[in-house]
Image (cartoon, rainbow, N blue to C red; front, side):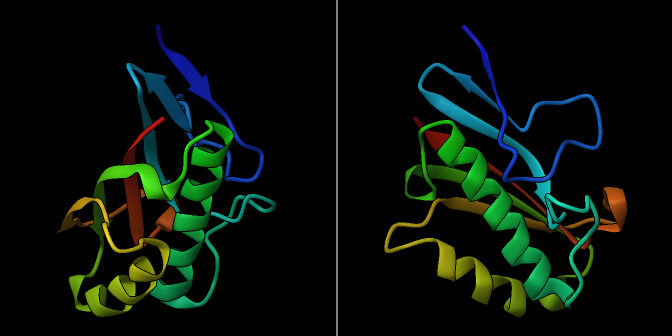
Amino acid sequence: MLEAIRSDKAAAPIGPYSQAIRANGFIFVAGEKGLDPKTGQIVPGGIAAETRQTLENIKNILEAAGSSLDKAVQSFVFMTDLSEFAAMNAVYAEYFGENPPGRTTVQVSALPAGAHIEITITALE
């Protein structure tokens, strides 16, 4: 059985998709960006601010599902400029403890809403 997860503490989807889906003991969080939940706009301040807002959005979605970042097992990070990797990585490290999830990071040519980063997470319930 599939269950859509929704949090008002995270930015609303900008297309026909759920913020996350619960299935078979996992929470699959859709690609989140640094969108401010109140304005629906990318937060100002560069890659560090965008990464922080992206992870706050993910954290809030996982909490709405009864999970947490501590239960994350896999993440995919999409960036429009890998020269900003160190700044992204520093913020990312603040959100994950001693056993961070497996991660893949790639550079892409563009992201929706003018975002510079998008992160998707899979976590245990």
